[in-house]
Image: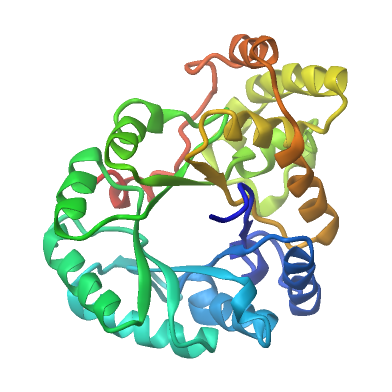
Length: 313
């Protein structure tokens, strides 16, 4: 078992503004001090930089960490390519072990699946990595319910990583029921909606430039979405928590099989996020949240057009 709230490390490698390695390493170590054990990274974050950073941060404390990383997204300066082949799984595993400075990955995800690559072939290779002791558990990310079933029939899938938040509930239609039927845990990334649900964006001018490409932050969608966030801010204020804590507590209230990995590179936000695990939302508050933000009320898609072809296979 791991605590319900972990730490997503992607933003520590420049995905959300300038990277600050000193601050990021201090934040990871603070997370460990506070009992956060689940750290999430990927070979694609900073093209290996993030794994190296996490490896440096956990040096000497490896036994305190449930270390999760991913393979299958290859980036260079000009393009993003998906490769979920058995050969890439093995090569990426070896590369990740080296960068992370460890001899075993606790949770190794297929970050994205190429639609032409049978998931069965990928899972067979991952099963071999488990048998060799290089990987403890296998996960999937952003795949369809049928793919989950096919993969699980080859080798147990321990976790599925998907975007899940008050603003992103597509998972509830078929993927979440499939995971529950098969006993697969769900790891929710972007649980505060890319920052929207934190309440820190009160106007378009508040949105950082690096978020402008997100459809829900686009000029036509932002104002109606901020109106929804304002409703959540009112509820949060009434019960004495921050909007981010309300969003995280709502997510955890969806089931004991849900884990959240909010990303941050600042210790203050880390501590705010962790505190949400102790916040119990009663049925009346949960109903108010559902009325405040109906599933079809959010304006804009959750993904950019260039991201859409890489998910749901």
